Length: 602
Image: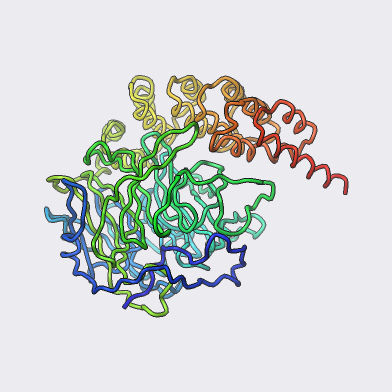
């Protein structure tokens, strides 16, 4: 009999008031279904699954070879690196858990080789490989294990890159790591875990607070940021072909567009900025029977039927299913609509976590495999189960690959691969190898000459990663006919918050004249990062777009950028109010001016 899996739904409903770390205690929820059948052996479980026509499942590994596989990643050779968390629900627990590597997959999907990389891990929920080592989220730390080339063991003790990560709710710790298109390491964290993140030794007043949101860390700059704030217990984020990101969340509405600088509806508590006034809401107009979800994947594997590309996959923990949703454009926003459930395991013990596509275009999924879905760990304490499956379409053979052996030219060419697995790994390896004039020239050529906007975006992201996105190239790209290319150029050139004067001048022009709401959304996000005194021309131009008044994102994203500026300069705030044509922003400017005036009068 088993305990709850650690990644799942917190048991507080949406009206729960803000709690301190000391006050928070999980509550039992009778709606959580407990399996009443016996567990199914691993080989049989794969055969029982119901999938769309043409698909079938294979068992990659099962207990005792893998237990409690809470997180995994796929390396440059197509191998699976898996964190086993038998410490759950105790955090940090004892130094007893393993990171294991599975490889040599046969035609039947089974791994032919299992290697223990590390066996002294405490409670951990996030994993990535890259930049010379292994990245692990083990509260209170973000760890880095250096690895020598060709070895499957640490080249020394783990380095603590960041500390201060909370563990109050062991379903909501830092989790589901992924390399973003911009070269940052991304992850998520839930709302009832209270983190104060910084490098070891950072004073309390200089740490970044996070209790729900999407975060990122730059592997070369050693910089941590809260990318977006709010929601509930999200577990994963991913990007589509155009660089548009989404994440799922528990308890509150489930589907969210991930926007830099966004503030989302919260399951509990208040936004750190008391002048937020209103937050962004879900992009779905429906909900499922229960609300506990995990994983995030836009399928870009290139092997499944075309109708699945750029659709979003995640697991429903309570209902033991893998869901699939279609995203469409509405103004600056995405709208999510329900597709048919993709995977029905016909086994209520299935607790699927994170789907990820691999080098052959098939999709892996780790299964915690548990009798109960959530907070009943006091009754169920078995930590001996776990599965990894592979979902295939048609007759697919395992790919033999080693991306590290590719030349720079081959890695550049990989940016055109239909399977984004190759694109992402090649982009990260180019970033690891560093600036190279020949690589810069090849990527600029692709950026200028490839007719496909998505391929131009890939060239842009890779060029940024190898420090080849010059001001001249950026100014050229800002005039591209492709709106997502213009938008992403804005985000990349504002990464450090110090765009050049020519770029700022172009941003102000675009804020006034660019016809794309996507571009205006990225300008609003970027404005939050720009020095207050320099953001006024962008704010003024964006506020004049009356056509954005009913957009899902733009009024609030504009407000989040304008608020500190209005608070710092009431006179300019009043001028902005006079020029504003978006009623909601007008209201918020008026409220903020009144609050600032009251404070100044005291």
